[in-house]
Image (spheres, rainbow, N blue to C red):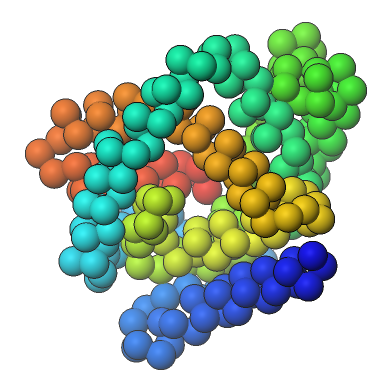
Length: 252
């Protein structure tokens, strides 16, 4: 089993390396690190329209978007709807809280890497309180009883604060909107997830990941439908919404 885990780490590492080298190979502008001394704040990504709408792979992205749309309405939504009937909302919310609590190491490490040591301390306090008194994190006791709010952080945000540019907009099969920087960040955060390192047969690991995924979808059913209803071009709406969300998230 260890050999399988090592293979997974190697695969993700190679994938990240390939993404970083990809823009150089094809001659497009991709992630780059700004090395100016003392410059710790990235330039706002909305300063130019060309940068804000960096979508050179739109044709391919739209095909993947249509694929995701089909999978959502024909597979994920029916499965999530049935799951919602079987599993009560309170339990689904608790499961979501529990999975978030487990990935505490990723949030803590990213806070430290970003120099946000006060936020790192908050992550530790919330993890201890919720793990010990909140049914291993299923109940957010830190928030409800002590008013210690959570703080979301990821490696994509860390890379942005280090000066790495977002790169082209990407649509990932099943995962949805992203960009080169956030996709690399997703790989790094996945490796920092303790569940990644638990020795278990592949079918157990995949079952856990599917449970996490379908539980999250069940809590978000209806959001995508509202976007489609309110937009003439859902692809553009999702793309622009993602870019604005990440710009706001990185600026926190």
